[in-house]
Length: 269
Image (cartoon, rainbow, N blue to C red; front, side, top):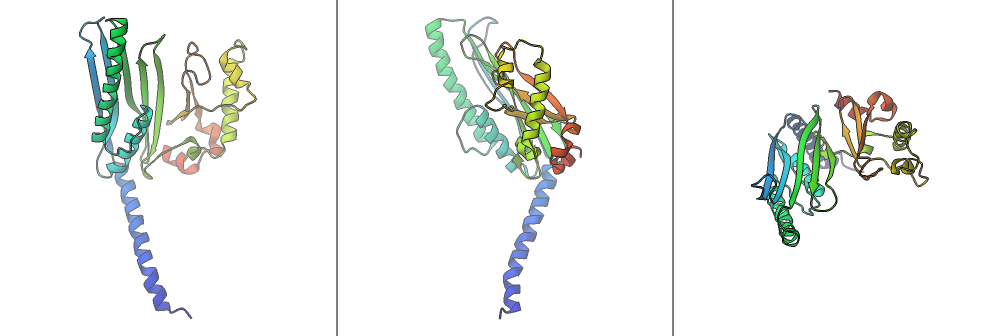
């Protein structure tokens, strides 16, 4: 027969650990909701003296969390930004991020010098990434990164990347964290776009994708806003460069039955 005192001795440390973890989670959630975010950047230039002269300009602009409990949120921001600029690193701090971005800028500098030597003076390259906070509640925050670049070639590129962060849980949210029925969302998005393009040329790229039998593509980028769920197709995702990007907001009332009620509550806090 199991001794009750033995069970108590075994269970007590588990209870203490559970209580400590709960206290820690509540504390992190409390202070994360009170974080502020300040701008920082890495800027690199070569030339750029005369308005039409040779120029390489790189501007990486990002938010820095300030306040107690910032460390984990900072790691999320750093990891996401490095992924956006195609850098493989396990960096966890803004200080290390800035060093990596400077090295990244220098790698473009060497390519720019080679390009300039081949094509002559007057080349103008740039990379520009700027962030903006577009939504904030007690538990959630959404940043939009607007990026554009020209690195030679026929034309510049542009687009947007969004990062939606659960401040309480300390995680970057994916759309299936928010929506419980992806098939219904897919059908809704397809309906919206079909109605928009129903009168356009059936041979364009957008309509080819909308009528595809291989599965309808949801956008890679989405954002939580106060008024609804923003979905954003960047250029080339469903259309040609000339047709540009495509974005629209689905009101929460339209997806009320398939949005996680915990996040719907957090959005409206």
